[in-house]
Structures are given as C-alpha cells and as structure tokens.
Image (cartoon, rainbow, N blue to C red; front, side, top):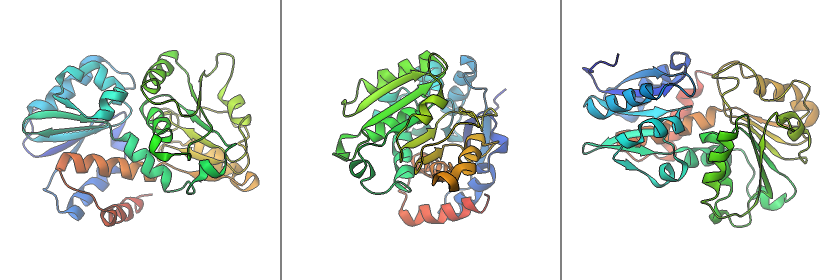
Amino acid sequence: MLQKLARPTFYFIGVDTRKSEIMKIFPLWIKELGLPDTDIRGYDIQPHGRPDKYRAIVKHIKEDPNVLGALVTTHKIDIVRAAGDLFDYFDEYARLFGEVSSISKRGGALRGHAKDPITVGLALEAFIPKNYWKDNINVHVFIIGAGGSGIALSSYLMRQDHGENIPSKIVISNRSSGGLEHCMYVHEKLPAVTVLEYVQAGVGRTNDDLVESLPEGSLIVNATGMGKDVPGSPIDDETFFPKKSFVWDFNKRGSLEFLHQACRQQHERNLTVIDGWTYFIHGWVQVMAEVFAFDISPSDVEKLTGIAKSFQ
C-alpha cells in the first residue's frame, strides 16, 4: 500500500531495488550537487508485472506533492502501456518508443521522458573509437534483447546526423515475438539507413549461432535482464566471441554471467569488455537533471562518476 509521504522523495522503479548501489550513492550525489535533501525509495515489480501495480505507482507519483519524480528501469514500456493515460506530457522519444525512463512534474503536470536514446549514446561514445563504423565498414552490431535499452541503442546507431559513421548491419534478437514486433514498429518510424535483421532467438537460430557468425571487430551487447534481474546469460559458455570485438553488458550488478563469459575470453580473443557502470551513471544523472530541473555539466558528471565508482 502506497502511503502519503512526509518528506520529499524520489522513486526508483525496478525489480529488486534494495540491492542497487544507487540507494547509497543517491544521497551523496544530492549533497554533491547541492540539491534539496531528498529521500530515495524503491518500488519493486517483477518483469512484465500486473498493470494495476504500474498504475498505482504512477498515480501515487502524480498525486502526492512530496513525490518529486522517479527513474524507471526494466519497466519502461510496461508503464506506458498500463498507465500512459495518467501522463500529461511525453517527450518526442517517449512518444516514438512508447516508453519512459524518467517521470517528473512541472506545474502540476506529470511528464514522461525516454532518456535512454541520450544516455546510451553517451555511454557508447565513451569507449567506441571515433568514426569506428565509417572506418570499419564490415563490422556488425548484435543487440541481444529488444526491450527499451536495445531499441534505444539501435535507434541511436541509426541517427542521420552520424552521416556515414553508421554500422553496415544491426542484428537484434529477442526471445518473444512481441518484443521484436515493437522494435520493428519503432524502427519503421525512423529513416532506413542500414541493414536491420530481427531474429526470434530459439526459433531456427540461437544467440550462440549469431554471435559466432559475426565479423571480427563487431559490437555485441547484452540488453536483456539476464545476469541482473534473473540469473544466467543469453549465450552458452561454449560460445566464442569474434576476435577484436567489443562486448558490452548493460548490467553492472548481479550474477553478470555474460560479462564473465567475455572476461574469460578477453586476452585470448583480444576483446574490449565493457560493463554497465558508465551507462548506469549517465542514466541516473540525466533523469535527476530532469526531475530536479538543473543543467548537468561535464565536471558534474566526472565528480558523480568518482563517487559512484567508489562502490564498485
């Protein structure tokens, strides 16, 4: 039962928020940024949970004046499907992708923003060499998972303002056909600037087959909840990553099987292995900037990153 709150509060809507480092990091960030003293409170829902659970938290955020806003993970699409009518405003990305990662309020209006297309780009550019796709026209991108984060990354990679610096092919796999259909629906609204392939994993082809068929130097991304929300990896231990590839696990806590699989092959196959910490930091900072209505500077990000990484 959601109770009326006595203090300013920021919600974290996830699956198992108690285990997240953000519960300790958030108060330190608030102090570093000079923001008003604000509590952080988790609200846990199992993946693809009951619609009434989503409606309850959105209604609570909207009606309780002490709730300043929320960051949403895992449930970005489900919240819009179950409670989209409770919002007064969606930004362009939220309307395009049918998801929200940020819930904020302005003048009594409940606002939803999809920040992933921004934050995933900031995280990607932190490790991928400049003009990598233009200089390596034969490499591909394989995104495992067609949820909000996977859609955001694929859409960012296809942005027209990247000019010729776009991957020659993007492959997206998902266990359910419904996730792939939503991904295709979003992509149909974007200019077709590269080859796109959609694969329902386990129906004819597996993620293992897809990984091992990629050219050297490709980017392979775990955009599923496996290794965080649920144990396991979307690929088998026996699967070989292509040499000189970039292997990115969006997760930064949990059992992290996919990340460990890549680390075991890192030296032998000359892999660049990236965890989810940079993505996590940019994601939170962008949402906090929206909720608390402040401009974030590169120096702010650097300071907040130092605080966050002390919890690694």
